[in-house]
Length: 106
Picture 1 (cartoon, helix red, strand yellow):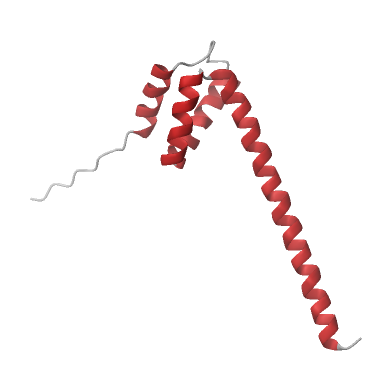
Picture 2: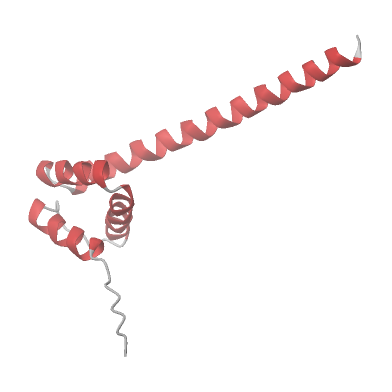
Protein backbone atom coordinates (compact mmCIF):
# COMPACT_ATOMS: atom_id res chain seq x y z
CA UNK A 1 0.00 0.00 0.00
CA UNK A 2 1.41 3.34 -0.93
CA UNK A 3 1.16 6.63 0.92
CA UNK A 4 -1.74 7.97 -1.17
CA UNK A 5 -3.85 4.91 -0.38
CA UNK A 6 -3.20 5.36 3.33
CA UNK A 7 -4.20 9.02 3.15
CA UNK A 8 -7.41 8.11 1.30
CA UNK A 9 -8.18 5.42 3.84
CA UNK A 10 -7.66 7.87 6.75
CA UNK A 11 -9.84 10.48 5.04
CA UNK A 12 -12.61 7.93 4.51
CA UNK A 13 -12.47 6.93 8.18
CA UNK A 14 -12.63 10.58 9.24
CA UNK A 15 -15.63 11.17 6.98
CA UNK A 16 -17.39 8.09 8.35
CA UNK A 17 -16.83 9.30 11.91
CA UNK A 18 -18.11 12.79 11.07
CA UNK A 19 -21.19 11.33 9.41
CA UNK A 20 -21.91 9.06 12.37
CA UNK A 21 -21.46 11.95 14.81
CA UNK A 22 -23.74 14.21 12.76
CA UNK A 23 -26.33 11.46 12.48
CA UNK A 24 -26.29 10.91 16.24
CA UNK A 25 -26.71 14.64 16.90
CA UNK A 26 -29.66 14.85 14.50
CA UNK A 27 -31.24 11.83 16.17
CA UNK A 28 -30.91 13.47 19.60
CA UNK A 29 -32.48 16.64 18.26
CA UNK A 30 -35.42 14.73 16.76
CA UNK A 31 -35.96 12.89 20.05
CA UNK A 32 -35.87 16.16 22.02
CA UNK A 33 -38.40 17.74 19.65
CA UNK A 34 -40.67 14.70 19.99
CA UNK A 35 -40.51 14.89 23.79
CA UNK A 36 -41.25 18.62 23.72
CA UNK A 37 -44.16 18.05 21.38
CA UNK A 38 -45.58 15.38 23.69
CA UNK A 39 -45.40 17.69 26.70
CA UNK A 40 -46.97 20.57 24.78
CA UNK A 41 -49.75 18.26 23.62
CA UNK A 42 -50.53 17.49 27.27
CA UNK A 43 -50.50 21.07 28.56
CA UNK A 44 -51.97 23.08 25.67
CA UNK A 45 -55.40 23.04 24.09
CA UNK A 46 -55.57 22.36 20.35
CA UNK A 47 -56.03 26.07 19.56
CA UNK A 48 -53.11 27.08 21.76
CA UNK A 49 -50.87 24.39 20.24
CA UNK A 50 -51.79 25.57 16.75
CA UNK A 51 -50.94 29.15 17.71
CA UNK A 52 -47.59 28.09 19.18
CA UNK A 53 -46.76 26.11 16.04
CA UNK A 54 -47.55 29.20 13.94
CA UNK A 55 -45.21 31.22 16.15
CA UNK A 56 -42.55 28.56 15.58
CA UNK A 57 -42.76 29.18 11.84
CA UNK A 58 -42.40 32.93 12.22
CA UNK A 59 -40.20 33.41 15.28
CA UNK A 60 -38.14 30.40 16.34
CA UNK A 61 -36.53 32.27 19.24
CA UNK A 62 -39.88 33.23 20.80
CA UNK A 63 -41.17 29.68 20.31
CA UNK A 64 -38.16 28.31 22.20
CA UNK A 65 -38.55 30.84 25.02
CA UNK A 66 -42.24 30.05 25.50
CA UNK A 67 -41.68 26.30 25.20
CA UNK A 68 -38.97 26.43 27.85
CA UNK A 69 -41.25 28.49 30.10
CA UNK A 70 -44.05 25.95 29.66
CA UNK A 71 -41.66 23.10 30.50
CA UNK A 72 -40.60 24.98 33.62
CA UNK A 73 -44.24 25.50 34.63
CA UNK A 74 -44.93 21.79 34.18
CA UNK A 75 -41.87 20.74 36.18
CA UNK A 76 -42.63 23.24 38.94
CA UNK A 77 -46.27 22.08 38.93
CA UNK A 78 -47.47 25.63 38.37
CA UNK A 79 -49.70 24.70 35.48
CA UNK A 80 -53.06 23.24 36.43
CA UNK A 81 -54.99 21.67 33.57
CA UNK A 82 -54.48 22.73 29.97
CA UNK A 83 -53.48 26.24 28.98
CA UNK A 84 -55.94 27.83 26.57
CA UNK A 85 -55.37 30.10 23.61
CA UNK A 86 -56.05 33.32 25.54
CA UNK A 87 -53.55 32.39 28.25
CA UNK A 88 -50.95 31.47 25.63
CA UNK A 89 -51.52 34.79 23.85
CA UNK A 90 -50.85 36.57 27.13
CA UNK A 91 -47.66 34.57 27.71
CA UNK A 92 -46.51 35.21 24.13
CA UNK A 93 -47.08 38.94 24.46
CA UNK A 94 -45.18 39.07 27.76
CA UNK A 95 -42.24 37.05 26.50
CA UNK A 96 -42.18 38.61 23.06
CA UNK A 97 -42.29 42.20 24.26
CA UNK A 98 -39.26 44.04 23.01
CA UNK A 99 -37.65 46.47 25.35
CA UNK A 100 -37.41 49.87 23.76
CA UNK A 101 -34.26 51.85 24.17
CA UNK A 102 -34.73 55.57 23.99
CA UNK A 103 -31.70 57.69 23.37
CA UNK A 104 -32.17 61.37 24.05
CA UNK A 105 -29.81 63.91 22.61
CA UNK A 106 -29.13 67.10 24.40
